Length: 118
Image (cartoon, rainbow, N blue to C red):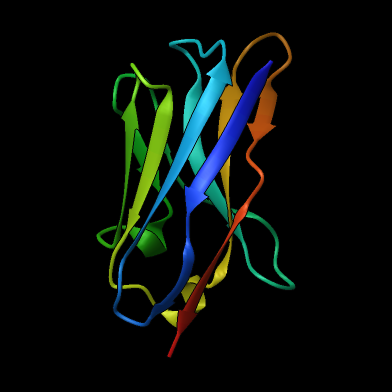
């Protein structure tokens, strides 16, 4: 089992920055991919960014250049640095661990609200 605890988030003005953190407890495998998703009101949850233990990253095209994902394997922690925030970035952000196996498993954090005011 994997338990994810998120921190960070909150209210920021447009153009500002925020950093999210997500610490995982339990067994994290080197093959696990850690990432961030977000869900805005009335919209589906979408991928923000993901990162492998080797540092390979994947970003939503619309967020490249503004958001940076990083991972500390020793601490089983993933971070999301969000810069130049826009009101449309307002959403609940969820940490995720995806475990690829015979049956792929997804573990989720509790979610944290990010609100960007104009």
